[in-house]
Image (cartoon, rainbow, N blue to C red):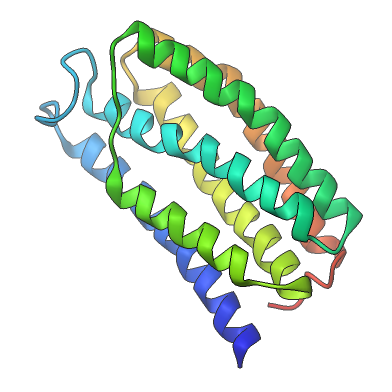
Length: 192
C-alpha cells in the first residue's frame, strides 16, 4: 500500500508540474497583455518561462543531490550526478540574464509543487525512490522540453530565447537518458 501510495504521489506531482506548465502556457498564449506582476520588459510567454525555469534548474540540482546519495543503482546515481553538474551552469546562466534585466521572478505555486516533490523523494526508500525519481525525471524532462520549445517559438526576449535554444539540447539529452533508465529496469524501475 505504501509503495502504490508513493508512486501515486510522484505521478500526481509530475502531473501537477505538467498541469501547471500547461496552464501557464495556455494563459501565456491566450493573454494579449503582460501580467501586472511581470516586469515591463517581459511578455506573458517570457514571464511564464522565467518563473518556471528559475525554479526548475535548482529543483534538478536538489533532487539530483538527493538521488546521488539515495539511489540504489549506480546508473541512477550517475544520471543524478549529471543533473547536478549540468544544471548548476544553467542556473548561473539564467541568473546572469535575470540580473542584467533586473528581473526577480516569483512563482510560489510552482515552488510549493517542487517542495512537495522533494519532500516525497526524501520519504521514499530503495526501489521506490529509484522508480519515483526516474519516472519523475521522465515526466519532468518532457514538460521542461515543451516549456523551452514554447519560449523558443513564442518568446519575445532575445536573451531568453537564446538561453532556451542553447539549453534545449541538454534537456532532450536528459529526457532520452531518463527514458532509457526507466525502460532498462535498472533499479527495478519497470513496475509502477
